[in-house]
Amino acid sequence: MAKIEIVFDTETTGVKVDEGHRVVEIGCVELDNLIPTGRTFHCYINPERDMPLGAFEIHGLSTEFLSDKPTFAQIADDFLAFIADAGLVAHNADFDFGFINAELDNIGRPPISNSRKVDSWRMAQRLFPGQASSLDALCRRFEIDLSARTKHGALLDAELLAEVYLNLKGGRQTRLDLGSNLAGGASDQVISIHKKRQSITAREHHLCPQERARHEAFVSEMPNALWARYDVAE
Image (tube, rainbow, N blue to C red):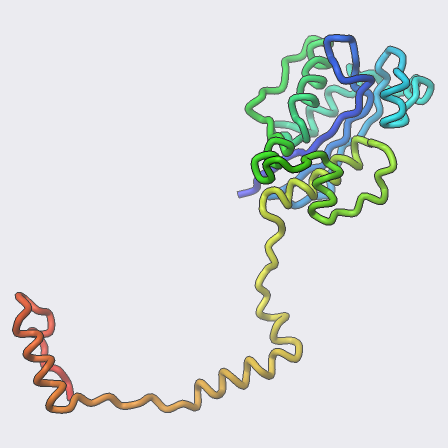
């Protein structure tokens, strides 16, 4: 049965919702049983406020760049349709859920339930206690290419997180493909072993008189022994 999950990330004007900070970018990657389906959702959002320098230095999204982008109210239906009722994976999910739900509240829409939340940061903390659990640190741990990540970007970070999440869940298991194994040089060895096994004649096993006597003595001491119902063949 398919299990659809959405890995997502947000970029914002700051770190605290209660100080009036807003979402400026959302990136989502759809997974089907941990494998990317190729479906993504990405948008820049006009936060209807200025961009603080500290936030700009993190993601590079300026007030001018965002000025002609749609507001959250304008993209909300498309975003909610994309995530549907899937589980939602985010790194430090409380942050992303907090901002998305604040935006939904601003336009009079119900919040996304915490029951859908999957926090990859907490997963990493449990798996690697005391170790660095940032997205960059986990990418390095799992040898995931970070060369394209010169600044934070919601869609790129969601794509990287999808790979991290797969590794946190145990990684891709190599499929056993016997057909491909038989196509190469290993096939001769496998066929040779198979032929050798076929060429071995089954040994005949006969009970000698001493073995029969020991067996009968052993069985005679067992109540309702199964062997007592049958003759032992020569």
